[in-house]
Length: 104
Picture 1 (tube, rainbow, N blue to C red):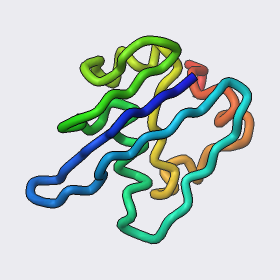
Picture 2 (cartoon, rainbow, N blue to C red):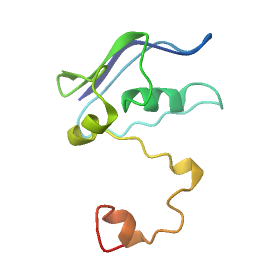
Picture 3 (cartoon, rainbow, N blue to C red):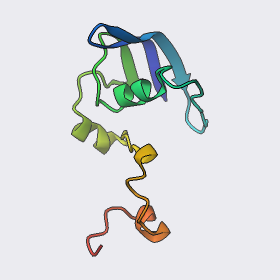
Picture 4 (tube, rainbow, N blue to C red):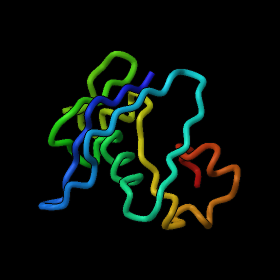
């Protein structure tokens, strides 16, 4: 389960997330929908450790993630893949399915 409690994130003087709370249970599929600039990417980057919250908690399977480095979060199964920039556009379906293959 992923639990977010009263999350606040800023970019300098811009308060991007103001008190976001949510819970996602095992087996659920959740979508974030909103206009450009509404905080969707900021929330995902904060969950994956790329941004640090000023306030609030992120809990994944009972473990608080706020102070864990992104490279350590990967071992827990938490990662951020910025597909919006089409960085994987030239990969085949097979390569996407097995990104750790060494023979690419």
